[in-house]
Amino acid sequence: MFARTILSRQLLRPAFAAPVAARTSFLTSIQARFLSDQTRQAIDKAVSSAPVVLFMKGTPETPQCGFSRASIQVLGMQGVDPAKFAAFNVLEDNELRQGIKEYSDWPTIPQLYIDKEFVGGCDIIVSMHQSGELAKLLEEKQVLAVESEGAEEEAAKKE
Amino acid sequence: MAQSITEDSIRAALADRLKASHVEVQDMSGGCGQAFTSLIVSPEFAGKNSLKRHRLVNAALKDEIAQIHAWSARCQTPEEYEKERAATGGNDGPPLDGTAGGEVTGVSQ
Image (cartoon, rainbow over all chains, first blue to last red; front, side):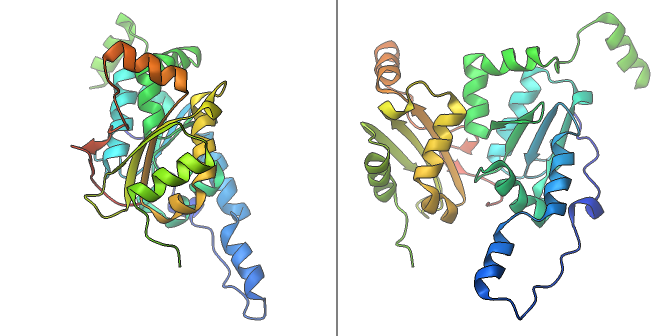
């Protein structure tokens, strides 16, 4: 499985204006906490970029954390179609790393989105995998790799 | 300044804020108090799906989780807990998926 192109840095790193000194510290702390519109829009776009989206540490080929690795392994085992999958490395972009936690209202990474809906983190992914719920959901959303002779021949030709 | 977070402090907070009947908390950071995994049994989870249960826990432990690097949980109702115990003659305990022998590997939050 390979990672889709990660969003270009320009998109995910909005130009942040420096906080104005005249503002009260109360206001500045609110600003710092809330997601900027630009970051929110960039994350909106990331979440809709594919039917299955995983925000993780590292890449699918080289996960940088055990929880992210476990999540990628589960998705691989389930047979998610690489063409319908996108992974975003939060370690590449600090605004994404902090922004996605606010966006999802979820404190940890990795974070899985299926069909633009937040599903959960590593422990939820693994428990849904074990209970069969994940397989069912992936089938419903039609994101599993199709096992047909045609598709295999095509893949072989491409290589 | 918040006091340091330990297995006991999290256990107490969960029992208190979620009326949990049974709580197991394990430090996954080699004793550093930076990563925890838990098994939480509470009647408050009844009728909620996995994600809603986790969000309930996240809300109850908002301050603690904000300070640590990793957090995992398994949330069960008392009935589910008893069922698992009867079936397996014990309980699987807190989830250790993604860890290496119960310890977190890789980059912190």
